[in-house]
Length: 295
Image (cartoon, rainbow, N blue to C red; front, top):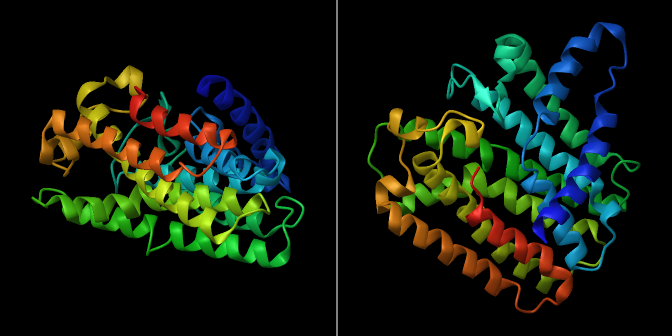
C-alpha cells in the first residue's frame, strides 16, 4: 500500500515543486538551478507524504495540502544543503549524487539553501499556492517558522554540533533529535491537518502524539541504518556518525535495544490513531515504513 501511495504523492509534490524553480530573470539561472538540484535529485519525500496523509486522514482533498507538502520539502532540502557543507558534516554524497556544494560550489550552496528556506515561507503565505483562509495561512506560517528555526530544527543542529565527542544520556539525545529531526516531521503532520480545513482540537492533539512518535522513530532508524546499511543503499556516506564520534541510539542503547525502541515508538504512533478510521491508513502505513525502510 505504501509504495503506491508514496508514488502518487511523490509525483504530486514533485510536479508542484517543479513550477517553483523557474528563474524570473536570466542572471538568476544558476542559483535557481542549484536550488532545483538540491530538491529534485531523489529523496523519500517522507515529510510531504505525512502532510498529504494527515490532510486526507481528516477528510481533506490532497490538493489542499500541496502548499504544505512543498514547504516542508523545501525546508528539509535547505537543511540538507547546509548540513552537507564542510563547516557542518562535510559530506560529498547525498541521495547518491554529489552534494550541492560539490556540484556547484560552497558559496552557491549556501545561497541555494537560503533561497530554499525563503521559498518555503513564500509558498505557505501565498494564497494561490496554499489556498487556505488568511488566518489558517498565518497559523501554518507560525508552525513552520517555529519548527525550522532556532527553537526547532536549527536548534537541534546546534545541539548536535556541540555533542560531538561527548557522552550524553538518552534524555539529552532525545532532546537533540526532537528538535533536529522531529520538529519538521511534527510540523508536516500539523500543516497537513490544518490544510484539510477540518482539523478539530482533539484531532490535532492525537496527530501531535502520532507525529512526536514517528519523528523520533525516524531518527532512531536513521542511526540504525548508519550502522547496518551501506553507502550505495543509503545514498550518503555510511558510518559517518561513528567516524565523527556522534552520539547515536545504537551507541547509547546497543543495536538490539535501539531496534526495539524504534518498534515501540511505531506502536505509540499507531496507538495515537486509534480514534481514526480507514482514512488514516496512509498514516499508519507511514509509521510502519519509517522503521522498516532500508535507506
